[in-house]
Image (cartoon, rainbow, N blue to C red; front, side, top):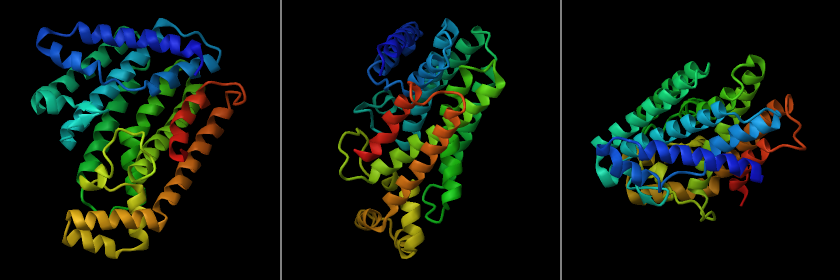
Length: 310
């Protein structure tokens, strides 16, 4: 990653910390805890790199959009942990585990309001896009809840879920930084959508990849929580008896057996094929407006993409 991008990321993190520090006294302990659990700023890096590759100026408005996007993402993670009853987030105690579900939900809602405040104060045309994105994220979560323990879910139904849960935020990130230029924004938004699909499918892949030890996510967490992801769906297509097995007895023993079948069946290789497909679709979109031989944007995407090949 170029020093130029990291310089902007430092500014974004300072702004986020200031917002967390300035929160009401009743939320101070939660916000202090949040500062230790921030992620790798993938979305902000994508936004800054896109602006630089387009040879545009990284203005204060752009930095504010990055901050708003990171706050939105942080909010969704807090709500996800409440839904999943997750004890940990990135190796530390989750908000709901440390402070309880009620305060976690309120904290997530509070961060949503801060996100909208920043975008509205920015006087930015992206406000409507932020609202639409949060709506789609919420719907994606609802669809996932409806399909929890649905062992007959199709790959198309699952891709619809993750397009709302994950891909739309990547789409927003790339779209919003050039929102004034509708034609360019739509191309970048589509590229962001494809790269968001890559991001989620790589996560799905790594959940079953026994050779990958760098992730802090609990192994096989999705299936144990009744969340059916792409590698498992492709395995079910080859062996429908596994569906019957889990429907009749969702026990630890049967879960472990199904996991072993995923590893043997080719479900992971089919997931990789789909990851490659979305990655190339995103590259094709980027190539319409950015020289891929000399750019930062694809470097950021490769941080996501190459995780599945380590």
